[in-house]
Amino acid sequence: MKKIFLLLCILAMFSCKTLNQKTYEIGYVETSFGKMYFWLYDETPLHKASFIELAKQHYWDPFSFNRVIKNFVVQGGCPDTPEGFSNSPYLIEPEFSPQIKHIYGAVGMGRDDNPKKMSAGCQFYIVHDVLGIARLDQNYTVFGQVFKGLDVLDKTARLPTDSLDAPLDRVSIKVRTLKLTKEELTALGGSSFLKNE
Image (cartoon, rainbow, N blue to C red; front, side, top):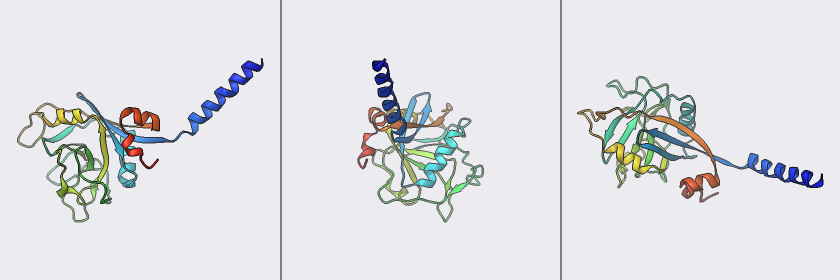
């Protein structure tokens, strides 16, 4: 009887530790080529919260990557129309950080040409230029960084496109978030974002 009680106490301790363990919410985009996992920056709380909420609603399920430019960006979300992002559910105030740049794999929010540089709530892009795109820094908000699945980005960026940079074959996207422990994030390849933890 004592052994059973001791075993139950040990199991209870482990389950409490698991319940109290800190988790990190990351994003991912799934295509027919695979998944791209990316860190969501705390330095851009409005964009991070917007992304998480829309992902939970499965907002992007009907959409695709509608703009693919090799050595520039892969972009998708709400329709990019001549009038701007007329179908965006809302606009988001810019959140620029000098430490967060448009490097290879950066995830940013698209926008039309508005003077306040407000982001469209639904249009996002992933930088494909291995040298980065410095001219976009402080002009478009970067809210994430791909840490696994850059091969998926490369395959998508190499697709043949029409004269408007839309892929000839539709690239459907499934956008979701995951809550991972430090160990799970490290196993997935995202340990570089845990340096201050």
